[in-house]
Amino acid sequence: MEGIWTLWVIFEFIVDSLEFRVLWYNRAMKQGFIQFLVIIALLIVIMSLLGVNIASLLNNKTLRDNFSFIGGWIQYIWLQYLQTPASYLWEFFKEFIWEPSLDSLRRLREGGAVPNPY
Image (cartoon, rainbow, N blue to C red; front, side, top):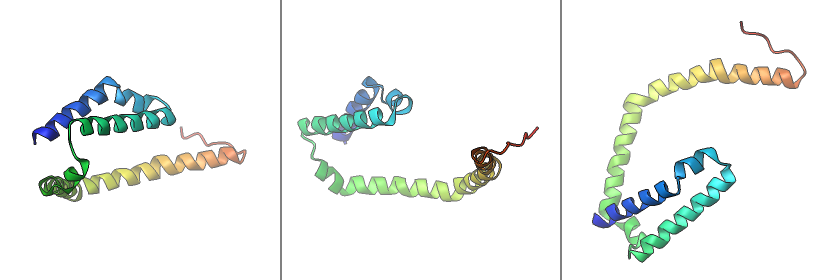
């Protein structure tokens, strides 16, 4: 457990020091993706230097059980509480925002006028 905590602290340090959130959201995807790959490579090197075997982490029954437990709870929360409101919001978005926007863009592409909703 201490090894995983150490890895988490190192990962947070790398993410914070490289301002990962800013890179991911504000820069072009090409730059962000390459830098993301560099961060992953550095994380693997650091884990190797610390003597952490990635294969043993993936084969660890306790770790798999913990992730399975968390995944089960996330699935339960989604199915019991979030799926219905999210579906309503998605349908509202599609009907009142997405489809009218697409119709307007199609009319503009064809040279027509876009109706004023007001």
